[in-house]
Amino acid sequence: MSSRTVIRGGLVVTASDEIHADVLVEDGRVAALAATGTPAAGAFTAEHVIDATGKYVIPGGVDGHTHMEMPFGGTYAADTFETGTRAAAWGGTTTIVDFAIQSVGHSLREGLDAWHAKAEGNCAVDYGFHMIVSDVNQETLKEMDLLVEEGVTSFKQFMAYPGVFYSDDGQILRAMQRAAGNGGLIMMHAENGIAIDVLVEQALARGETDPRFHGEVRKALLEAEATHRAIKLAQVAGAPLYVVHVSATEAVAELTRARDEGLNVFGETCPQYLFLSTDNLAEPDFEGAKYVCSTPLRPREHQAALWRGLRTNDLQVVSTDHCPFCFTGQKELGRGDFSKIPNGMPGVEHRMDLLHQAVVDGHISRRRWIEIACATPARMFGLYPKKGTIAPGADADIVVYDPHAEQVVSAETHHMNVDYSAYEGKRITGRVETVLSRGEPVVTEREYTGRKGHGVYTPRATCQYLN
Image (tube, rainbow, N blue to C red):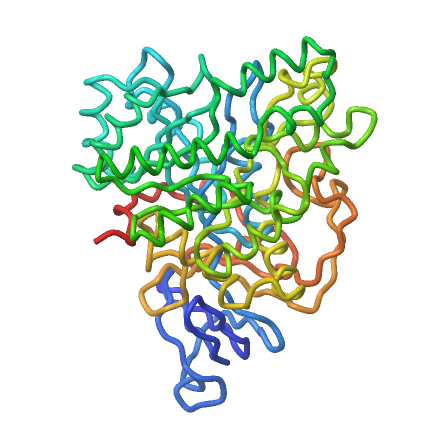
């Protein structure tokens, strides 16, 4: 039984084009586009017609960095794959790439299987996996080859969190060498965790226990140093590098220099670094704990370098690093000791809206919005053109977006399973109205019409920016 939908009269915005066009969806894919009002568009017939007059028609967002149900610091991220992907859908994101975790002493396969078990049958939108590599050894390196072959084509390592996820330079180099051979992409949490631990110990000894000190000990220079070191190790290995959650001017400068030298080095930032700052970390009565994440929020003056990096393509992607912990009972674990506050913030629902606000504010263009939120993450992680664009043959992951609607972000109205909003009270122009995932309506005129289990696992090709 074929199912057809026509989306009429909207401005179709992709990373490359803006055109007033009608979109024909058939059997879960984009079948055709035709300029609105032309005979070709008039010939589109369907059981379902969506009127997008005065609205944007954009590709569903691709969030390449989420942590659903992630164990951390003696607790778990508050969003399950069910609640987290539902919230993603509400915010116009139709694909997430989450992180499966290898525990020390265990195989990559065990970690990947555990994450498949969490996600399967529970997701409202499509999903893929990266693999966190915590224990580099000969067996792990062989497993990397097998994972690439089956569509897990990126591997995250940590220069931070000694004793948990930390890899030393030798382990990083070995993994990078393996990735250079098998086509995988190494993703790096670039902070000098060994040095940070010294500063944490010293701060606590001085009685500096409030959340704001989380930001003060995780110094921008230690992010820049680790970014520089990761770039040089990747250069030695002949491997591409993707640096996650870039937050500091000095780290952007390292990426810019490497890209100017022609290296395959990529960078992502996140909405929290673009819109929030150490002012939030310093909020009184332990409220700052809501904003504890790593890399940390920086002083406001770092934001200009991040926006400039996004305009010049020295930063290519905005992901969320969505890893929510409730203020009550989870963030509170760090009262009296900032180092025990679970690291992470909610954001999967608001990335598309916040970046549209950046269009309204003049930081980026409309097409750049779609590029950094949809097309580039899809290409980076081997999902394009199935995801990230509106073109014949692409999955019909489509958002009808009202650029004029106004909303106020609040924990009262968001759909993430967390008891606060990092953007509480923020006024935003623009709002998701209707969301299709593979042609099925998940959000219909601001009502949730999706279901758990609709979202399917999506194997990925290798990074599409590499020769």
